[in-house]
Image 1: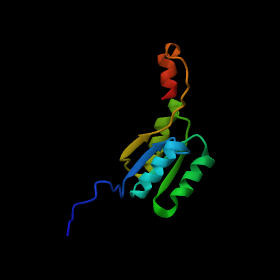
Image 2: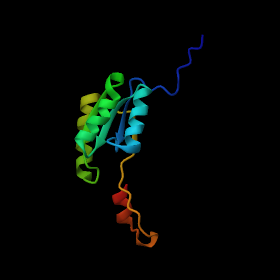
Image 3: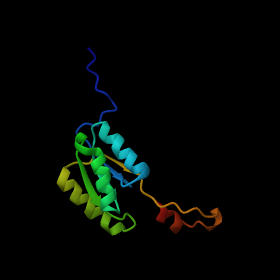
Amino acid sequence: MNSTPDPHRLDGRWIVVSGASSGLGRAIALELATRGASVALLGRDRSRLQASADQIGASARSRIVEIDLAQADRILPAITALRADVGPLHGLCHAAGIVETRPLPTNTVDVVRAQL
């Protein structure tokens, strides 16, 4: 009998997923939950975050953190409150972003920062 732990299991670990209200962020949060992770769902739209949490269902623990990451001064208090609620955070998947298609010469540092 092999007692080597499955390296793909994330049981007991809290992972923060930004952009979890739709698209890639939601898909990543769902996959992490199937691997046993508890997921903190970050995004701007509470109802869409709730839909993500509903999809996760009872298979894993989840928390919703309604936040606009463009408001940088709100990030530290939100993560501090999350950590106080759930304990240690074990990972981050940053899938949030606003992509604006534009000619390369018109991109500035400020434009790129806003997209991240």
